[in-house]
Amino acid sequence: MIQTTSLKQKAIQLMHILFPILVSQIALSAITFFDTNMSGKFGTADLAGVAIGTSLWIPIQTGLSGILIGITPIVSHLMGSRKEKEVAYQVMQGLWLSLIISILVLLIGFIVLSPILDFMNLEVAVRDIAFRFLGAISFGVIPLFGYTVLRSCIDALGQTRVSMFITLIALPVNVGLNYLLIYGHFGFPRLGGVGAGVASAITYWVIFAIALLFIYRSQPFVSLQLFRKFYSMSLRSFQDLLKIGVPIGFSIFFETAVFSAVTLLMSRFDTMTIAAHQAAINFASTLYMIPLSICMSLTILVGYETGSGRLKDARQYGIMGIGLAAVLSLATALVLLFAGNHVAGLYSDDPKVVSLIQHFLIYAIFFQISDAIATPTQGVLRGYKDVVPAFVICFAAYWVVGLPTGYLLATYTDLEAYGYWIGLITGLAIGAILLMSRLVKVQRRYAAKYAEGQPQT
Image: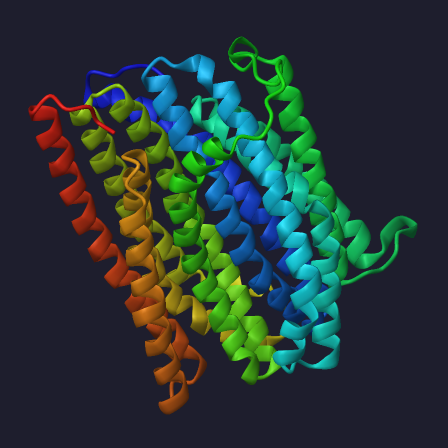
């Protein structure tokens, strides 16, 4: 990354960072998309089983990955303040922490998975597919979390094209394995939705290995001496990383978990409704990669500028990124409004399921508008290392307002399943407003400290 002096230079640097992240996120989302899509083509029970399994796994994966993403602002600040020699140590501590988290996830999952699925009172076929899907994907937990640390370091150094390259390799690997393992082509076992879990686990190992190879042999990573020296675990470093990472992780967890909670609550509806809901959520999540990518870019750029003490530049990046997300959200809303039937047809050949998906997608339009404000704003706040209030806001908006509102509407009105979506929309809108208010306060605080000559920490 370089210091910029004009808005044109900032726009170029933002796009230079953003575009590879966007491609990477879309590709990663496409892995889940193809898991869901290809399982749905195999059978409705497989689509529902993968939907339940994904609803349990994604909040855990994204929440815990969010903790490890805390390495991004740490490395960005180190690079901005010219402390490059400390990067290798911080990355190694992140990897140690990822290993500990992975082991805990596997142990807890082994104990609680069956009771959770039994509690949901699913159809026997759906329950079996969900259980075996999660069992298969568990073999990729360790490399997935390890890759999260490596990718956070790669992106924080501004080398987002490397992440893009790795992810673009992962997509055809995953789709190809899905083709072989879901449908049983070329002599491979015909596993149905469970094959999607096996394919994902193998893909996680592939991207972790490729990332290690890049970091060990390519610039600018070689000059930072990454993995050239062994560092033992440091509880002090864990504490510093967790101080930033835990609020980020919990913010992400509560945002993704609320969608999963809705899917689990909707288990009282028929399999067709569950499948349609999950298909609509899956496509909306794919579109969500746009504001999420802008969020990740802003964390890198704002973190770099605040680490260098250039608060005006940090603020300009924030305005530019949030504005871009708002404009693009209008484009995605038009896609959902005018092409909903075609999108729904990607997930199922059953006319009734397609009709249900199309109805859910109409509500997803309003998701895009709120996400376009809330998500990039969180990225800016992370760049300032202001993470705890965002966590509190997300929890209150999604779980105190959004989910209860949805439950009441779904249970006590004729809206039924759609009531949950209206509740989610309400929570997302309130969260966006509160996060913007917090950002204004943080920027004023930083400006006051700068005026007084105090360090920006």
